[in-house]
Length: 337
Image (cartoon, rainbow, N blue to C red; front, side):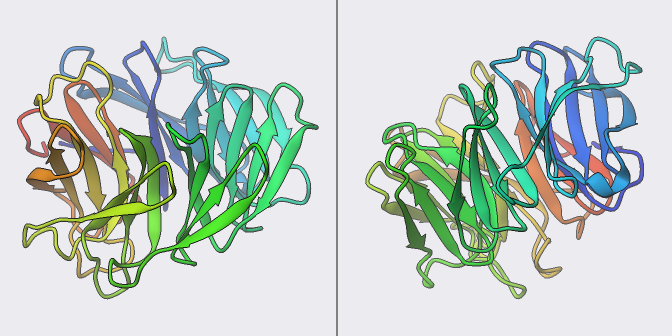
């Protein structure tokens, strides 16, 4: 299934409000936050409403669920250089979200793209100034800026070492940050594996990253960063996946009804090349997460949509389509409906 959203040139991030049948989507070109009401049983969308969250040139982008402020989300104004704490008011579709707090990006940083919360700290990638911001949201005067290469996209903390890793798509390199000492190091992506790291998330045993590739093709490559900073690379084996340009990845939420084998969701996107497919891939692993045991593919109904982000729920998976103002849903049966 594909669900049309209010028209916008760029439809970006997607998160679910914990404990509520509500999904939120950011539209950068209009600075709209779209509320999607779900059927609690089927997870199908039963209603959609868009609300302006700032001026259009504020460029609403990053979304992240807050644990410190239950029921709230963090968001970024990429054009307005602000971090927002938002009450999405998820109990009613027609209730407009409220901005409860705004934090200006300090230190001359520009272009907040992605935001994530780790206790009292927000980690934010600054796409325009090529920096990573670590900011104490309880005392915003306490912050650190780390220099990155163009362009920092995602940041995630390693579940074992505690280091932070940042994908840098224009540099084809991953930045490693020790938050205790402040030391940084660059991990270049080997040319034989591919190029352009974008999606990067914490997962079983490490931080996982995908490679988008070039304007000609992708390589269907993704990897897991170990506690020592070394990357174990994997490559899709199916003919459908060998040239996939992988933009994003995600893991099942706790309690998901999907198969017993451990696995990861990958999103192939046409964002860099119309020659590649917009596709959702389910990759299963052995219990050690070191060997691929299976691959399943579901092409999005609308191709050349520049598929952007993934959101696995209990019984289905959503994907945003950047250029078509659409959200696609893959059901538990393994088909896009």
